[in-house]
Image 1 (spheres, rainbow, N blue to C red):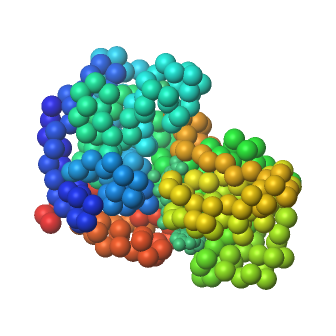
Image 2: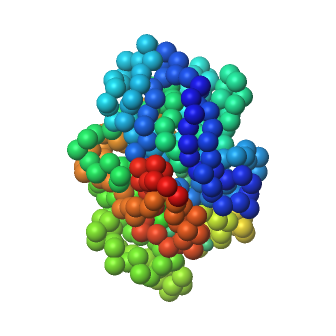
Length: 352
Ligand code: NAP
Ligand code: ZN
Ligand code: ZN
């Protein structure tokens, strides 16, 4: 065991404060990663605020982790000391269920182990995330990172990146298709970049008129303001795929109306109820589907990282010091970030 330092929430109303805790001693298959950058996902807020229930405190959030390997166990093959490595939302799974066998660890039927706010499979000890100085993780759950990309802007790929890449691949988005990305935050702006790189015609569907000026830079072909009923009406029955990243319960019926017959809207944002629920007629008339998707497995996460290196894709980030994390969370709740906060973990060593 060795002593780690980070920032933790101690209950659902609390601000994050400095916190020291134990990491397990590395096992044969483990790598120890010195954390350089940690992205700030809206899921960090949901879990710290216990929006999904069952939160474990103290909680050290963070599942968009980029760092450098500083130690390897005797059985490690993929990494050597000095390599860059990334860790996303998963640090373990049962490894033998049908989902794990198909490289879909995120759907593990034996209970997956999430990077924080979870429990180690053997000891039951809480897992602690990336708002900290180092992490110990089985090499299977770490991915290789290209040194050709801007590392601080790579961190959000580990959650925002894979969560949008995976459904775009699963629903085979590509040339000749019109794809709408709903909600232009950390996930959504990555969805726009990926859909464009996959060859689709991409529309940003947003509640924020000012985000329209970023359309060209992000790679969108058009902007649809979801609060403009006339524009929404004019776009009815025209989309081949919708990726919905809105983080709160909302009325999905206006978005369903945008889909062409037989097409799908994949939900990645809301884990709780939809309010109001979708109207049957909105699905029935047009044989439309509402689906869901969770992050991605480790094989696909590596594929996504390689795709980003090949296409020079990273996140648009605003860097913060760990000492400013509570203000950043307040701003994220107010939809005030373009498009992802990333913590420079070197600031953890500065006096607070
Ligand atoms: P984010 O950065 O806060 O972005 C969410 C975007 O949704 C906002 O930028 C805003 O875009 C839009 N939005 C926010 N509030 C809204 C409202 N009341 N009505 C309509 N639109 C609203 O969040 P994120 O980090 O991208 O995460 C998005 C959601 O995905 C969170 O709930 C998170 O927990 C979840 N998530 C799921 C997975 C998964 O595996 N499925 C993985 C990671 C995260 P506009 O300004 O463009 O309207
Ligand atoms: Zn996340
Ligand atoms: Zn499994």
